[in-house]
Image 1 (cartoon, one colour):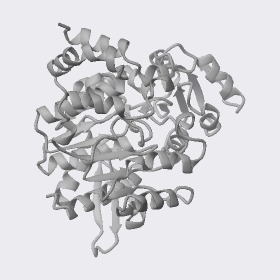
Image 2: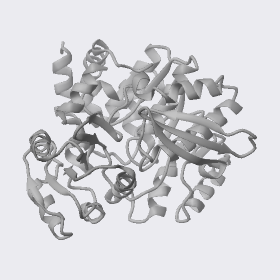
Image 3: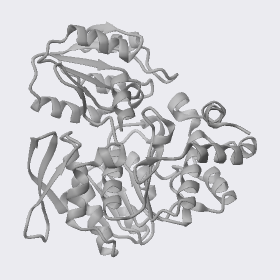
Image 4: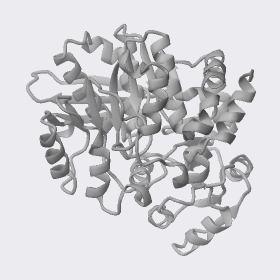
Length: 438
């Protein structure tokens, strides 16, 4: 019998893992997940679900929704990926990570199937999540798509609502080389008679969603045409939003503890999702919403999204890793007050590195590094690409050495930004310490 440490070692080493090897770990169908769940008694049918896809924002929307549902009194499961530090971050109930004993028991129960079914790491963790949620008799699970949607392992559920946050340039080697192609893949989560919410309307993708919704005869809602952020301010570590919604006489004032400007888009998406749930007789009030948004991090353990790790100098970590993510980072930087900007950046090989690096600000001191995974782009290669865009700096073998150098160089009024990869963020010791305090 395997113990917990041995179980994790088996999952990480035996099963193909996208985080480590990239596209080779991706299966182009849901057959393995269906087979795993069938052997487990189809746990995915034993609780209600909300399904969330999108290029950016799906992690934030998932956690905000989970916080609201939990505050409303629902026993709430949350499945997200990848994890920052601890594997168990992927599977939570009411903000608490999956029990180690369950991970161990599940791995011992299913490991004899590995050679026969040959599941990927992601497929087995989806099955584990659904089995855990069923065993714990949850009311609802918020389920984040891993990649794409149409053939993603999570796409075996029949949710209450489907959400696609936005469409941007990412994983083009797997999803397609046009926004329309990427949208079509993500639209694969749209199902018959299940309301679907699109967070961000784009001319290049709008018709794709309209066509896909019509094919399965379901209602489609573009959230950013239904709700509008009238104003935003920052106060006491919160992002204060005033939101007007079609058909409502009074504006809604929401304070959220996720202070990235991009959370404005995510909150608009969340509000339309809540509206559709309310129409299905879910008991969610305005008080539940405003209470939950003030403490999303505390309720769900959500980290790494424009998160301040220390002051004087200010150290921020953000998991932004693609073109849209970096555009949002640049928008955030434009409203920040600081003396000098220090950027610690590391990326993975299969991203459009040129597209991202071309967006980086000219006036910054750069620290090029890498995460400790095989997919990581070597820091020297990253520095070479950056140099073609006149971004110069120093190379470091890991993010914490880079951060120590930046802290030595920075003055109290400077800003140090760590970005470029979820995996890089997860290796930042300051963030790990903060997560351990939760």
